[in-house]
Amino acid sequence: KQEVTQIPAALSVPEGENLVLNCSFTDSAIYNLQWFRQDPGKGLTSLLLIQSSQREQTSGRLNASLDKSSGRSTLYIAASQPGDSATYLCAVLRLGNEKLTFGTGTRLTIIP
Amino acid sequence: GAVVSQHPSWVICKSGTSVKIECRSLDFQATTMFWYRQFPKQSLMLMATSNEGSKATYEQGVEKDKFLINHASLTLSTLTVTSAHPEDSSFYICSVGRGGANVLTFGAGSRLTVL
Image (cartoon, rainbow over all chains, first blue to last red; front, side, top):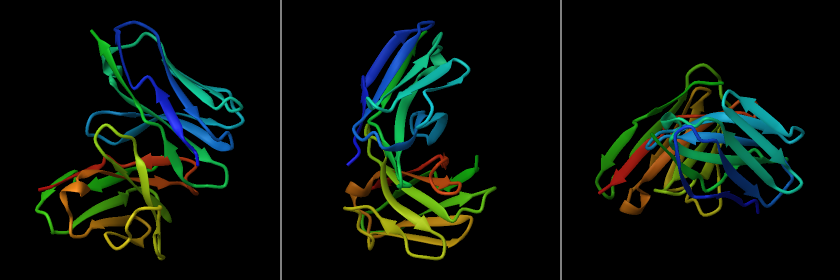
């Protein structure tokens, strides 16, 4: 059974700092990995999707990497802003399975 | 990606009543939709896969008679929580997959509070 873990569970950093969020998964037989953002009481916004054959994806200040063999992904946020404050979730899609398995999330607070 | 609308966004009901939540795919004909549940400070857990024109597929531990799913058209799936109890209070989110779950778009979610 696929298990997805995110560390840390919560993170507070001053505005302007670069930061890294971590995601690990136990089964490397994945189709893709996605990073989502969730604001309090809201739905999910997809940030980046990395196919299993890719090593990284970039969008603006966000960069996500994937090391499938070690079961790890990181989300790098550059020059953090207060508007980046949210919960960040990673999720993996298993090969031959249409179901996403979500991580436990990291609650990020950017301090102005 | 697809645009997904959920209604209601917030509902409060008395214990023992039933509540229906709608998930609409506004610009994409979805043969498959997914229903997730999220308890406070926890991650999303898949409840069931909604299949247009056929029965939903439920995840282990999810009572199909309690969480009724209907996917009668390519743009609408409904989740009915029957005989709701306080422990059913949660955030319910649907998602639409294009050609399976490879790329998913999520609704804004529906928060259910059962008194």
